[in-house]
Image (cartoon, rainbow, N blue to C red):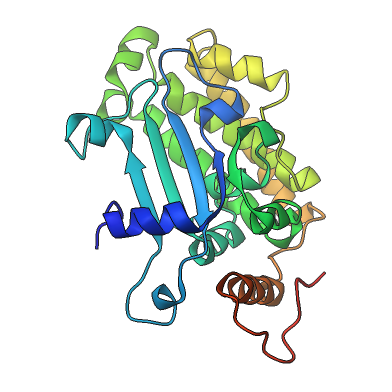
Length: 269
């Protein structure tokens, strides 16, 4: 079943526990007139999609597709790209340290679109999912953005390559991932919007005020720091899987109003 179907839209609308902005707007790196709006939601799907034969993992909405009738229409300025994950799928990805997936934990309150008690509880306990495992994911994503930038007009945005000589949006993502990965492994948190001086530096990079060489050097230094931190950070090597399982079990029971099974605790500390 397609992630865009009306059935999944209804699940997302009725059962979302947290929805926030996650794209360049929340990072502070958006350039006026060039960026769409990205949002991410988490929902607790009904029991029949967990213990029955049907499955819900995510719902996807793209206003560009709705506006044009073309499912592959690129998003433009002011378009909305929304993905709402099953809480269980989100937790699996978060535990692996996926950089984008972690953002709702740290989004400023002003960028929270909707939230329930469960969403607030999750945001109050980011240490449940944050670990050195995230460092490997940030390194991987940084390298991916670098490779795409270096492919030039064969990937990405030819108009940026023509104007600046390289894809400055890929370059901005590359450096941002390095900055945020280092902060996460050093502090256990990500500051949003990005703090200075990196915020202005990346915005300038996206507008061609830094060279491709400068971007590569900055990313290389940040990557080296990340490679050290995945071994030396005070964060745990991996999340406590038992704690995550207990929290998910308790959360789904609460939402479904199922009597608690004896011996299963609440959120563990």
